[in-house]
Image 1 (cartoon, one colour):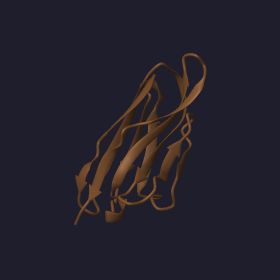
Image 2 (cartoon, rainbow, N blue to C red):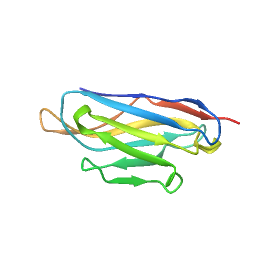
Image 3 (spheres, rainbow, N blue to C red):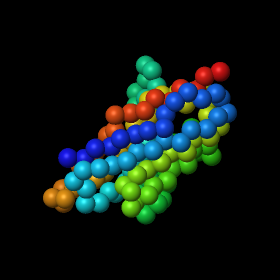
Image 4 (cartoon, helix red, strand yellow):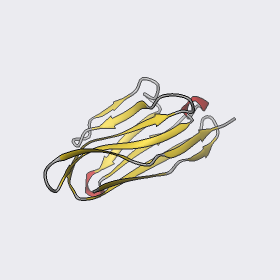
Length: 120
């Protein structure tokens, strides 16, 4: 019904940058909040950042000042610009969205994840 597809993960050295993208498609009427979560090996999934449909961001303390979330409502896409990456940022990054579908019901959708590896 709704698909989220992430892209932009990869290998980067400490201090480097990456930009993740997540495009939503399917039976979409509108999208409320969109966000990013991550799961490191052996750890639980954790919140990274969210953004409202009005563009108001919220960040985890661990990424404040280094990551920037943004969205393009016309493209149903959310971005995560990551700078000053650290080895502890290594994780699978998942996109999340609260979607109002064409039947006007709401569902919470997840992407399949994209791997970010910060290595020294």
